[in-house]
Amino acid sequence: MDTFEKMYSLKEAGGPLGCSRDSVVRLIRRGHIQAVEFPRMGGRGRNVKRQIPESEIKRFLERNRGRR
Image (cartoon, rainbow, N blue to C red; front, side):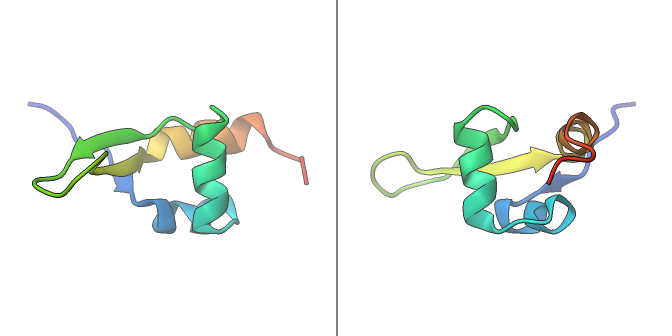
């Protein structure tokens, strides 16, 4: 049986990380956090929904404990 990990939207991930959605996007772009991209139907351009696994948030917080 497969187990599924909780996934957070960019906005939801800001809560445990203590930052805004825009800051979460910056962390992803800089390679500090890995996000999973899910394609959306229709539209133009790069139409994806990004989600962050709970384990990735925990990993980031462990790695950056005490920094602020």
